[in-house]
Structures are given as C-alpha cells and as structure tokens.
Image (tube, rainbow, N blue to C red; front, side, top):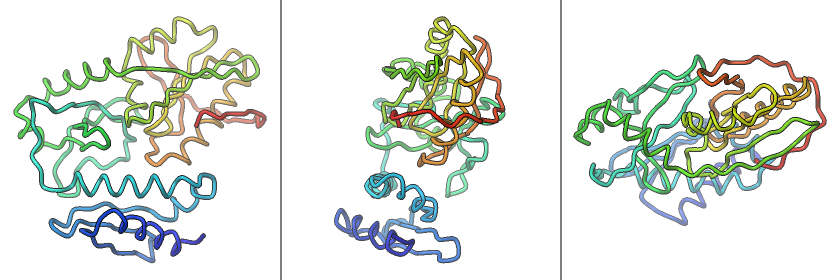
Length: 269
C-alpha cells in the first residue's frame, strides 16, 4: 500500500458512513484534510505516519475511519448540557497546540517538563477539549471545572495487566477509553503501585491509550522499559512522550535511558 491507496481507502470507507464532508490532499506534506460541508470544521491526518503504522497494524485504517467519523459528528454545531457533561483531564505533550483550530485558547495546566494537562467534555465515543469559550458556556469557574475533572478521573476503573521479564515487573493500563494516560494523575493509584514496588518505580505514558508502570529490579529492567516506551510512542495515534518518569511518592522526574537489551516480549499493546 502507498500513500494514495491509503488516502482512497480512507475516503471510500468514510463515504460509506456519511456524505456531508469534503476533503483535500496535500501532496507535499502527504496530509489528508477532511471537513464538514456545513461549517468547514474538520481534522487533518498525516498519512505518511499512518502508513508506517499500517505496516505493523492492519487495524489502523479502521481506527482512522472511526476517529474521523466521530470527530466530524462532534464538530457539528451543538450545545453541551453543563448539568450532564462529564469532564476529564487528558495529558498531552508540551508540543501539543495550546489553541483550537478557531484560535481559542485551551484550558491548560502544567504537569511535567514533557507534559501538560488539558480538559475534555466526554461524549462516550469521543470528546472535545475545553477552550475558554466552551468553559464560559458551561457556566463554571476554571477551578471548579478542574476539581470536577479530577474527581471524575478518580472514579474511572483501573485494571492492570502484569508481565514479568527477566525479574522485572511491568504493569499495563489499557482500557481504550481515551483516558488511559490520564490515570497517571490518579495519585492514589500511583501510591498503591509504589507501595508494592521492590525496585525503582518508573511510569510511562507513551501515547493516549496506555499507561505503563515498571518495577525495575535490575539494570535490564531500565533497558526494557526504554524500548517499550519507544515502541509504543511510535505506534500510538496520539503520542505523548517516549521518556519514562521516576516516581518517589511526591513528584515525577524524567529519566533518560539508553536501552541496550533487545530480547523481550510484549503483547499488551
């Protein structure tokens, strides 16, 4: 498959779902822009990046089509009911845009040197990041919104899958609900994991849909964690950071690891 075949396949699949959109293809940047016909709102997909991922994951086209379809639906002019809106924090890289496509500033809280916290109204199958006009329409203060988001996050379930490699334990949080990486903000959960760690505890959020916690008991554990982080970072639709963080019960400190070991197996993607 090449860029053009991938473009045509995505458009064909979206057309099967709806006919209220138009698209443009930027050959120079190999980017596909899909927009609603009624208000011009839309999203841009970097096809070169998607094509590389498609080589390792044949489900990537399904995920892209679903993402585009849901995004176009939510970009319709709609009013959000503040009384029933579910708001959650979401973690993004510091390089993530701080304004919406319309130029409205998002509500952002600093997190680490690598990450910031944004806030989103949840629509079950998708969500919308909260900018200043949306916050005003919700009729609540920024502080109240942040407290609400933090409380909602604590109520999200957390299930972990454990994998032990060369005496090091790795725990994966992967609910695919859009808030897996956000669970790094649940300090009660981090403290619980720290309490059972026998070595140094590392935390990783390579992309939106996974949180990795490592109990590194020897040097090999650090190498394995570094390689896992890079693998997930390159494969995620919404990458955050390839760096791991050391957690001591109070703060997250970025850890730079030069991985050397190559023999590990991980199926919890």
